[in-house]
Image (cartoon, rainbow, N blue to C red; front, side, top):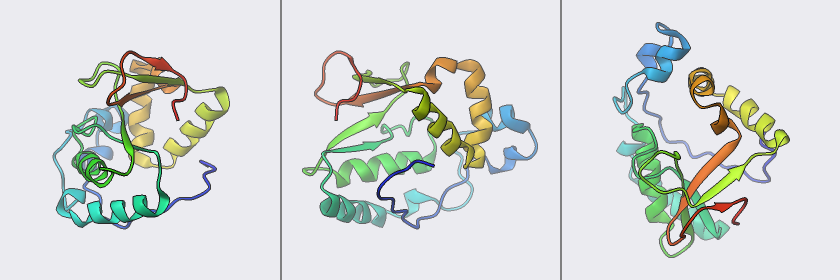
Amino acid sequence: ILEVDFLEVLSFPNALPQAAHLDHRGPKGAAEGPRGLASGKGLLDHPEAETAIRERLLAQRPRYVLTFPPDGINGHPDHVATSRYATRAAEGLARVAYFVRPEGPWPVTHRLRLPEWALARKLKALAQHRTQALSLLDFMERYPERLWTETFHLSGTEGTQEGPWW
């Protein structure tokens, strides 16, 4: 679906902050479920993930690492852990860009408007993940313009740049 050249999935467990709500409250209930209340062990319980990420970064040598902002964008404990581990793993190796909400605490420094083909690919990819697909319905109603506009924060950048920065 994503048509990427390389993808490696690390086998760390996921916390399930909305699990109890997905079957009982429908899509809107899933989108409004409690954020940050994890059931089961998640990525926060596996700090060795930071070393695994750093090893991959040393091998790949990217210029940028894209991750969640420190608050995980929505408080999900796995997103918070991902941000923490990826940011620390990238120190001295790559610049860290956060995927941010326009109304969030980190200023938008880069805005990318998706062409139609990229939006179609994005929606197809989101549909593969049940909780993403369910929460997307409510999101589409509330913020339709956010479907084709991605916003990022890159430290050390002033103002807002339109288009790709890489």
